Length: 259
Ligand code: 1HE
Image (cartoon, rainbow, N blue to C red; front, side, top):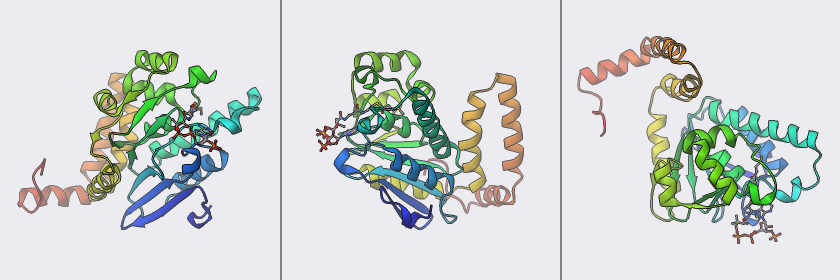
């Protein structure tokens, strides 16, 4: 699917940054089948010139999650296939090879939270709220939340959110690690773009290693994880780009850490 064919996603290149917008504001960016197909198509084959993706929602909400209208009449097998399609899609978001920065506001709910936790850096505005209303809708998560949301906030807290329907506000979400940066109203997208610009300046191999090795190592036993870390380090540290970047620091041509 070429980016021109998208109808529920907007895609705009800003230099090396692909800015991708969920574009169903009338339905609060609820994720229906055509939208998940477009998200899947984009992240499975992002534009070759893209180094980083910024993901945001048009309108006042990031995403209200699964499109409940579409889901009402599905049989068990259809739900299974549907859930696995979401898993494939969010795998492409998380492990597709490009860092993804999300700009969050309003509802980050259900499948919207599953999508957000597939992204690597999350920036939220004060309007952001996080909820998992699956319990009250009579359903379960199906977009990878039991793995990705639980790993951010813990299975216990996730169970509490699903059972009670409790929504956490932006400050609480920041304290829980659901966002990494909390900025002012209207500032999430500009901040996400600023961070994406910095990330685009990193060595592509380092970015690749961070987003592909870290989550896999987190799934490994300690000695396997440490071995995988050494292999990844051996690849990254011996690249010509790494050698030049380390030389630049030693010759005082590169910025210091934290600047
Ligand atoms: C929707 C959806 C949706 C809005 N599916 N149509 N997700 C939820 O349980 C969240 C459901 N949505 C809400 O609680 C609210 O819409 C919001 C808090 C997000 C926003 O409220 P508000 O007052 O701004 O909007 P609204 O009036 O509720 O909704 C505007 C329209 O969007 C309305 O349609 P309209 O035709 O009457 O204009 C809503 O029906 C529609 N809409 N959200 C379908 N989610 C892989 S498993 C994942 C499991 C889940 O994601 S469960 C969580 C589902």
